[in-house]
Length: 578
Image (cartoon, rainbow, N blue to C red; front, top):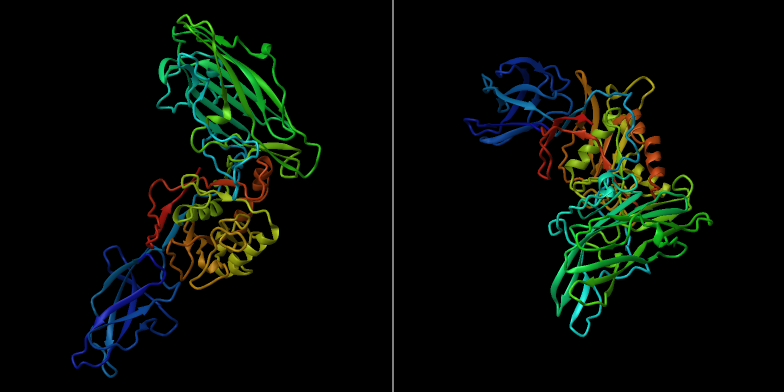
């Protein structure tokens, strides 16, 4: 039985065709199914349950009251019939059964000395995750273009910067540059080894493999391949820095006499101003001849006006590169063309370089973030496994997967304190944890039971936030219009043997189609899993209303669990903390 609503049943036939009831008696059993100790199913002298009368040949059924049967225990039951005047002279044969709860997570032993994970530990990735409701557009942003070409001459010749190549299409970069060997400006993962785009909350690295093509009437005559690297670091209170590296991906073919590249200009919006470097700022020459493989880099600072308090600004830096390309076939006049960064984004990452700068109290002082990169909040699962296990359960086993990077279901921060209270009170009304929790889960005498809700009340994902209020996943009972915790998966923490378990709530069977969870757990685990650790994460990453973030529960099941997938399947496993 993977349910706390245990029903026992047996078919009964009366020789005279009379209506009959059944008396049900339950005993604990050994591994072979032999009865050991009688279970008192109620407070009566005999501790048995009697069914209602049923027609002869029908099935009689009883429900065992919650709490009478133990988890992971073998049982047997048998029945005795009564037709209103006569009892059976013998009991029926024994039937074996075992009770396992729909949710039984065995938790690791807490290590209260374990340090909190860093609030700035999000590794770089290429996911573009916009704030909730963000349009992603800027007034000065230009539309994505195709190839960037010169005009054709009288012979039908022209030169083009082709669209950047994918990692599979790009030629292997055989350049040996200092930038690649050591990373760019100390950022080890930003180099010209391969074309890709990666970002954290404060660093964005866009590496492109870009062909330079000479064509006649649309047919390529010669192609040279370059690696363009642009890394932006948000490293100041009212400034940030761009690092640009250019190098050939392969030796310049002999079809080219020379390729000469130079910055035309940098672009930004509003008070955002680039400080243009002069030609002498490059680390090496900016022209290449056949066989040449050198790399060159230049740094460009940007500033923005941070003098007005309480403001937010969106910036999208851009750069134009000029090219003079001289073929080696006797044509003396070089072809002139240009390459603009914003006209050559690959699909789905066109706003990874969008910067939000603010002079609010979102973080320490003033500062900037890459607003379309979602940082990751990590639980200290080693120290507070009760809270981490509850979030793990809801994230893994419900269809909304709140906060799961794997399922691309970010949490969206909700900064309205009044709405936070409304959402929390709907999911966790006063007294719920005390009524449904177990004191064995508490850490010490000063600890108290708390109701832990997930997704958090401070998110638009909260089950307690209605759709008219902007909620994404309101927890509604059939026919209901007001969110309620009764529509969430209910669990509680309880010590059994030497380990604390997270069990499904007495008398409830989750369907695993719920959109939220509430759990009666240790108040210390609930509060310390967030508290100052989450406040630090918020400030370090300058999180604002509707900003997305991921949740890493730092729990692992080792591949041993049976997951709920909407069919009422149980979730029973032993968790370990990372």
